[in-house]
Image 1 (cartoon, rainbow, N blue to C red):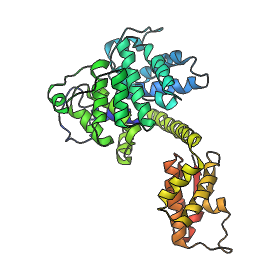
Image 2 (image 1 turned 90 degrees about the vertical axis):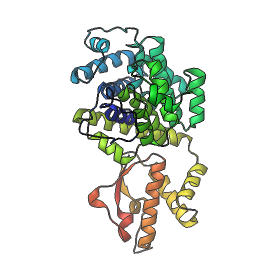
Image 3 (image 1 turned 180 degrees about the horizontal axis):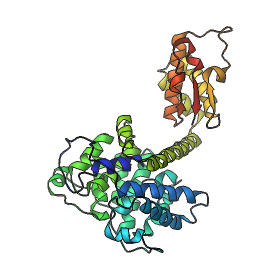
Image 4 (image 1 turned 90 degrees about the horizontal axis):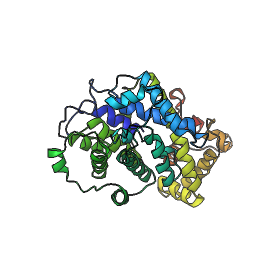
Length: 371
């Protein structure tokens, strides 16, 4: 979801002022979040509130949350018909095939448990306003691309699935830079956005590539960068810079989504992770050092079995008593570092207070909280 928000913020100043180059500052004081960000978060909130009831009331929640956020943020660039929809007491879909259905969809793949559920959820959050087949198709293709990237499919596999089921993606980059025009429809935004992701080399390159072809820049970038986030992840410096553009309300919503995402992805990962796979991962991280491998493996297994929000330390987990068996400072530091690396790779976040970061012989006593 943050990929969509970043794409929106960076693209905000180029939507009506295309620059046709990859050479530009990512962020400037003129950047801002638009309706793309606001409606993306509204859809996330609808999914969250309806999840407990197995999405039985998802359409109603989508309308409710989008109208709620529309009132909180009334001047962020809504299209004419959608703005009317936001302010109608009992809004009806208006046969739209605008790209708004695709730009707000990025939370869906993080809630879905299967590719079929991605399609069902994408349909429900789109059809409340964008009930034209192209509007639904654009949202679904975007959500499916994100889902495939999240589930470690290659770019060739993603391209094949989209071409077989949704759009022709055989574009020429130089031709797009020269000739692609501003267009607010799904069918002339989503394929180009997916293509920009497919030819990119990193998250940042996807962002710059998407800006460089012009068009409806904030929405095109929101779509392509939502896929890029799932495929590459987001560099920390870009993430931290982008979050400065959100107000307290949206920032709080984003942080809550991230907590849900971490927990959900970890649950999905751990469900399929075997002991052998974990041991292989630990072996790679510890660079085939058998002594370190066994120590780190045992500690990570203990951490996996801890409830979320547990605060502890390696010393507590292994009942470390230096007066009985002293571990050299260098070894403690290595174990501490490798445990954190393995946990990151299996989507476990270990939060350490800045005031409690100890080094050397005290590394085993660094307290952390598991999330």
